[in-house]
Amino acid sequence: MSNIKAPARTRSGCQTWTINHLPDELLLEIFDSYRQGIDPCDLQWRKKHVWIYLTHVCRKWRAIVFASYSRLDLGITVGPKKPGHIKTILSGPLPIFIDYTSHRDTTGSALWRLRAILRHCHDRVREIAFEGARADFDKFLKMTQRDFPVLKSLILQFEYPYEAKLPDTFLRGPDLSDLHLRRISLRHVSLASISGFLLSATAVTDLLLHFDDSFSPSPASLLTCLQGMPCLCRLDLSMFSGSPFQPTTTPTGKDMVRLSKLAGLFYAGYGVFLENLVAGLSAPSLRDVGLEFFEDISSFVHLPRFINEIEEHYHAVHVSFEDLGFGFSLQTQLEYNSLCRPGFKLVPIFGDVPKSVIRMSGMLSTRLTTVEELRVTFIRGAHASIPWRELLQHFPSVKVFRTEGANGYYCIARALLQDHGDPDDDFSFLSALEEIELGKNPSTDESQCGRELAAFEPFVSARQQAGRPVKVFFRPIINESPVLL
Image 1: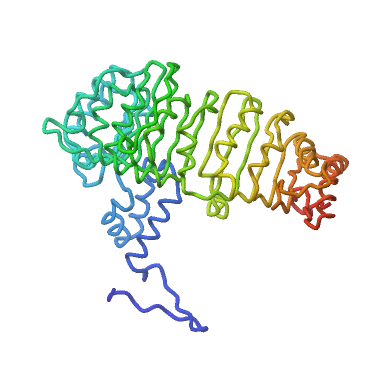
Image 2: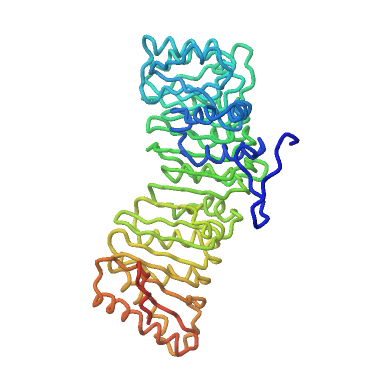
């Protein structure tokens, strides 16, 4: 940029810039980074309009901010509470975010304000979030029978299960204009009431659906809706219907719905619905998975196939045991190095824990063969009845084994010791193991630490004699060194 002054130089010859000399493009990057870091829920940036502070610094900053309102996600939030800038909203150029979720009031001035925005500013409404009872939605649907050309996000939460079909003109108008929605979240709905709407939302990238006990959507019907969403990247489903589903037949290749861009799948509910859903679904780009079930899924055949098609290679696994269940979390090397949350979670809620954990590890066996770090935690109880040796055999590449929780060490130590009962043992069990790390509770005294370390001593000695040493130590706490065997 020709109007930018040359940077000054220090005595050492280094160039220095003052903030007034930064190019507009670099300032925009700084503003956007600030936006992304200030509040992930947008409570400060959007609802409290923190971005306005940037416009008050100087004319240059103000010009950059308003010229980049799309990049910086600028807008005016309108809700039931009366704002002091309603005239500015109606006449200004900024996008509008409608949020009628925190105070469910669609009467009086709140109703007038919502009607005015939807009627006069529908071409500037970028997001709509609405929550209410049947009567509230009847009013809302009457006000949204028009085109919303820049609408990107729709969040609807019905107070009770909603059975009435969404009209074809909803958010499209009499001319049935194309929807440009990218994010859709619908809670307490039936698939029959929204299927026509979903079929018209062909550009959606993020879809959340919450079905209630009152409705039992057909997996085949949902697949029909998903088939028309080639850009879908994230699918979040909750299915708590108690109605039984019969296992489906294996579909042929031509009947499979292929979602080539689907990277995230999250599900909570009865596993048989998901089993039937993934029977007709292919997602070759899937990376983030979170599955939570409420029944035994050991007889499923389509879900294991679907999981094994995931192309990710996992570096670390966390197995967590609680009173009523357990869970598997898998991390890729990148997630592990970046300290990110695990991208794969599988959580059965009920069932026979010892049997279920073996069945689940068998289902994930192809995913577990490359794992190099295994962490086992006991949140409540040690689950001594778990066949540890059978479980650990699914981790042939593990180099580091971490464990923590009440009395869990003794169960695992006994399982490891069985490895050396046969003098002809070829050490194929956990053959890559190099370290065992024991989590130390701050209240644990040294005598207990000694007993827990002693439980692993036979295993460590046997490996040492075989020339394949394994270190066992407690996880170091602040200002302490590991206690090694």
